[in-house]
Image (cartoon, rainbow, N blue to C red):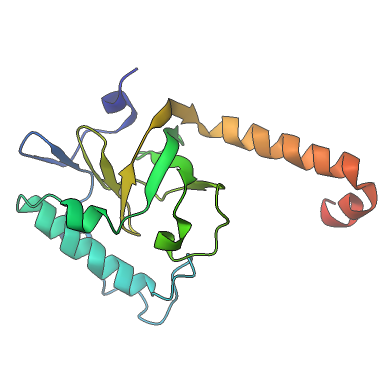
Amino acid sequence: MTVDDLFCEPLATIGSNVMLYMLAAETSVENADTDVPSEFGNGRTIAQEMEDLMTDLARLEAGWVPGPAELCRAPEFQDWGILDTGERLPKIWGTIDDVCKLGTSIPEGHRVITLPILARDKALTWVRDRRGFYRLGDCSVLTRSYPCIAEKSFAATKRRRRLNPIRSRRTFR
């Protein structure tokens, strides 16, 4: 299985390097409430994120590629893989060492899953989801299916129940 097998056919390929899975014309800020905060707790609204996405997609469509200046501000995934959720677009999962670049309160070393990937370069050195760009460092596993992560989560829940049965009864009914 190759990387290209995990992604659907791109809507546009710019040059020989950039694959777009959403176009700027498909993005709309009009329907996004201007005061609804992003689910990432980064002090931004969904409308602001959508506006940035629309701008970046239009720039990518015109042939622009994010350079070192843009990518140095992007969080970097280490020990990452492609998460096949069975949906049209996969997500990236892995560890982000410099979590302050995400603008959230995720503890260092925790696994993070992106939103569906909307743009990427062919070499997979960067990807773009609704939230922003991510740099991709060392890849540990090319793909992982979603049930695999769910099984790990279920196993962790079972361990917690064994370790603290009183709390488990209240929490996991």
